[in-house]
Length: 319
Length: 319
Image: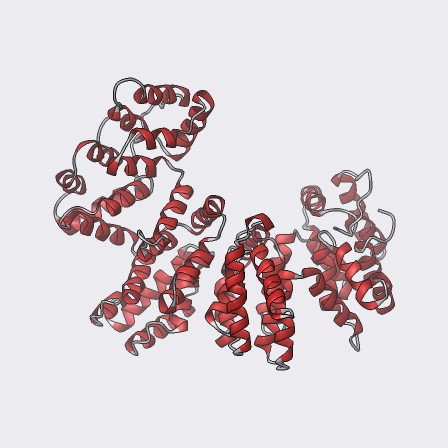
């Protein structure tokens, strides 16, 4: 469930555009106004606002925001305002670049978005960057990381439901996974094949069989290895993103907040990409695991407009 | 250019449906009527006819055709009548099945369709079979064949034009390909990466650089190896389908027709999948290579309604 709160009577995009335009002109910027509008509109509404803004003021709203805002607040408002597919394309590109390289983010995008949404992000990536995500990831990686990441970003998974799972196959593939993992053959072809091509519903059932047969979850087996190499970390991330996305996002938030010096990069990414999707579930998970509500934890670690923006996306304030 | 001929005044789908319905009832089937209608309607028109037929007679036109027709003629009419994406899904499934297994057909579909069309075929595959093409191909292959085929059917290539090619990259990747091939490292990761992830336009420029630098085409280098193993055959097919699709289809037709006993399976597939796309170019290529027009060669090797259907799709008869 989304945490985003939208007013019962949403103003026309013409009105929103005018208010935003006013927020930019004159002495200083009216950040409160920007938050009160954009942080309470869904993706369709934001895209209407952008279209109307461009038509009425002959300027790209995103460029205006870029000019007027700065720092973490800017990144939060910009990421939020982008259309979801375009935002994922932007985040994916960032993750393949030298200074912002982050294979975990690629895994996150490839494994937590529904297949068709991920496909739309790949289309947006091509429209923006004139290359495919597949070729960029394949070109910028090598060895085992490439072996795992390239199929992960390439496959168009079947978006099946629990009723369409092949139970016999799940049983046999649970055994395959167990054998490979006890042999420490983490880069085995079949292990990668199963995790990168099967539908999410199929994988969830396979992992349940795994736990039933072998006593603990697959990620517990992987943790026992104790190794800290990047490949193994990514493998665990793949499994977590596919099977327990809320737990995965809870952990990213926990680590971002509890760090010495908050990791605003990750915090902004998770809040802006999940506010309209499953943030309520992530909040529950966060409270359960940390005995502190997520919004209180975020409020303690952030300040100013940035804090206001994140809390608004988490459901605070008047919609 | 398409070879399909459509009448200047296309009858309403209601009229076509009624004529088809008449062709099925009474004594025997009127095959000539079926050809005169279906073989002269484009994909959109055929799909309207199917919709109107279902509405007016409460029957699926494809099932009716299945009941009324048989043999090669049936396969030709059925494949032609299917929507292109659905037809590709059907052909791809056939290619992964035990008795009709044909990895070349998978390569053909993955490499000659524009990226978005291939994606739609993958969507149609999922709608029909409740699994992804990726997982089926990955599950039914192994070793080197899997290493090549899985990325090939997975990647959503960038559909760039010649103006968007990175020439510097093409030069460097031409050298990479040459090095791998002279080392006989045909299953090398980077060789596979280049051929399975780069855009078709990019690959064409890369292969031109290859020829300019090293004196002959990449496929000539591969042919000199003399080996007949399936992997190498597939690799050559990938390159041909990406860079010279008309030459590829010409060869499939030549081999289908010149066989002792025509290969109707391949003949029907190529004619029904290309009639609406580039059959005129394939015909030119065929004439150039064989000194015989394609339609004459087909007429010599086939007969009856099957022959009439193929020739109609090649542009014969009154539209």
